[in-house]
Image 1 (cartoon, one colour):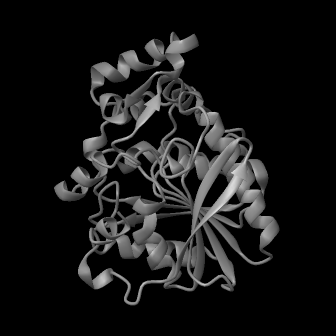
Image 2 (image 1 turned 90 degrees about the vertical axis):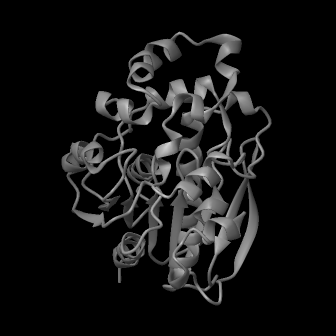
Length: 300
């Protein structure tokens, strides 16, 4: 699966030779979290890379490999419900678990490494990275490909499979309780998963990936996500520094969806537009700009 995602990159961008890649396991509460670690273990700077809905460590491999080529050690966890992470009760996974796990893993990475630490969030992972960084104070910088605040009606319209579903989803999911909250449904039923990539072949790969975009998640998770709010509102977020490295041709969550939250952030910040890139950026020069933005965010 790693190779299939790597082959979505233009041939000229695929690292040769590929960096080292190690599968590790981290015990968190009652969950065995799969964490891929890419690049030189002795690297001076580290990156924690958080995926979003439809992602997992293997899907993030192209970016991790490119970042490792810049001398960074990259950790990519499979968030609960995705990838190879083993949860005892899949129907009990909630978005709050993502937040708590991301915070604890970020703290663990900070404790294990005295050098620079950057947290990168892709798609919904952008808001997760923001929340984890501002809750813990453990990251030196945050780079997000988008910052979709689910409280914003415009964001919910973009995330949903259709405008009608967007209007109905939040009140309907709020009514979900008891056993219904544990019912797992395909992501494609509720989200606009086909817009995850502008490359039809990559969109098909993601949509058919049972560990990623072809996954099923509990209704309670989706309800929790739509009702989620960061612990620290952006006007109070005075650190760390933030970079919004947003795809310029994102047909799922366009730049206008991320700007309202980004513009409210009080910390030093920078906007980088990934020219010609879709939501899952593999196009040139956008993907190169993303790697440049992360490398430049590392404190020196």
